[in-house]
Length: 320
Image (tube, rainbow, N blue to C red):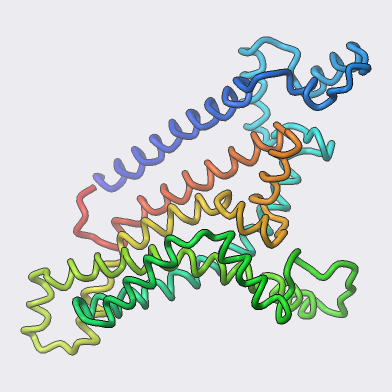
């Protein structure tokens, strides 16, 4: 019963947070100075009648309360408005770009977790020694490295080996899905490695600190006294308990990186959500920006909710 109440409360809190996100997302863009339609058509020769028709088309003709109600109703139906620039539904644009972002971020996140946790385990097991100093210094260096600077370095030194920009070879025709997949993989290599290297530093540091704390717990001494091998002590007792902070960090990153990859996608011209936000900001395409921020916020909310719901399954000792 306690577990059920916990899950209901967490979902309830998430729904309240979602409503706050929707409300903030609506009013944030209404607080910007100027008329969005007039900003889109800055030519003073555009007739007033045309501007009025555009306001009706984009739902900007009613009062603020009417616009808010219409916005909530449209979001409930999956309608996020029409792009000023592309003149197509924002939901369709975001769906396509979100798939491209996930294609890039999912393997990059998995790779960074594997490499970062491995580095953190080595540092924790060699705590206070030279290996710990090297691993910790490397992790801090990578964590502090600007992602766009690292991306430019890869483009400078590896530009002859891998494609520099885009998701596919422009104008190329592929004989099979495998050939197309390999082409996407070649284009994805540099931005994926760039993101992985920048992210692995934080995973390494969190895993190291968490594992060092776990290794001093009484149950680790009991496992050692029972004669368990070091491998069993590490994988059966230490890592499952040290993995909770890493899981929290991974959940937060998965949600925030949907929009946090703006720099990487811009440097490598990867057609994802981050690149879309950058282009929409330059073009003042408010419906796309509003839809993108909503998607990014909801992804972060869902990722954190999943982490909360999985905590009890991973560590039964936790009190709900």
